[in-house]
Image 1 (cartoon, helix red, strand yellow):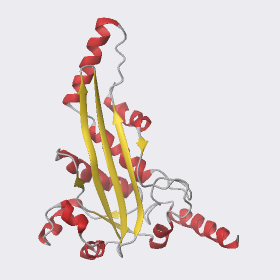
Image 2 (image 1 turned 90 degrees about the vertical axis):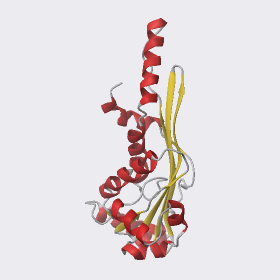
Image 3 (image 1 turned 45 degrees about the vertical axis):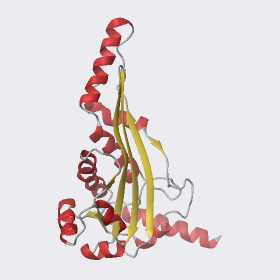
Length: 233
């Protein structure tokens, strides 16, 4: 399988768990009230042993938030400034009052990410690579605006056919995935599903667009219209 085609196929492997509330029409009310313009991405809490997980998450998140229409503070600058303030460990950052973190950068909201899983499990003829991220967006005054948790996994599509040749091909594909797991494509897929997927007014996923997105005015016009319809009822 060509890796250039992998990202599109990975979407099919996503499955959801955690804290998003399916069908709750009020779940984005706090976000709509706050309408954040800038987002501070703090270092993720990494519950796994691979340090590459933290780097990969931080390197890929800003792109998707920018695509959604938000200003994102440069993650390297954020890390340096947090260390200057005495925050050397991600757990310490996550435990700090969000109001304090937001004030350091004059950010409208803070995005926390927890890496729950980042593994590649190898068995003789198959390798499964899996990631599991939790997201939580909090306003500068400490209110939770949005949260979700997503998992994605990938196993090589064993198309070796039957017989000895097929078994050899399957084993080679599994070994290749084990040697070079598809962590980055999986990470990008989860970010895209969590952040870029249109939120809708009743959807269980996605965040609303930010002020630098071309659909910002249209989206909040729909929000105002829906709010008016609810009040009229």
